[in-house]
Image: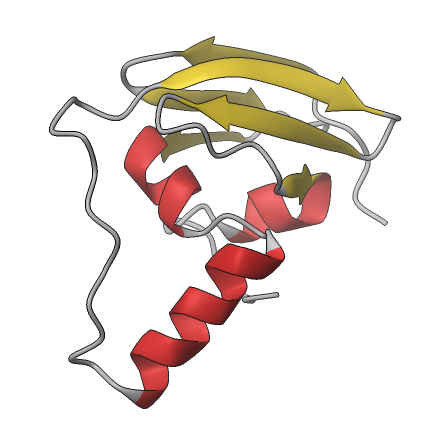
Length: 109
């Protein structure tokens, strides 16, 4: 199990800065966090896109996507509320770390 980060800094219009327990840092852009949401709905959409690259994606409201809120869930995850209303994915520490494209191995739930 991944230890909790030392610090989380949500920049609502840009992304999430994470300072990990080992001193390393990650920056995760808002659009990447939303696209890679671990929610069942987002996972199903990613699977559908893998199977059919011509899948029609849900359209937004034309506004720039923002992360409106970050809520600690127990001692193992955070929930992010996005400006498009999405708020059902729980980002565990290990999953957040896997989303950092500057890190090594990546996993998709």
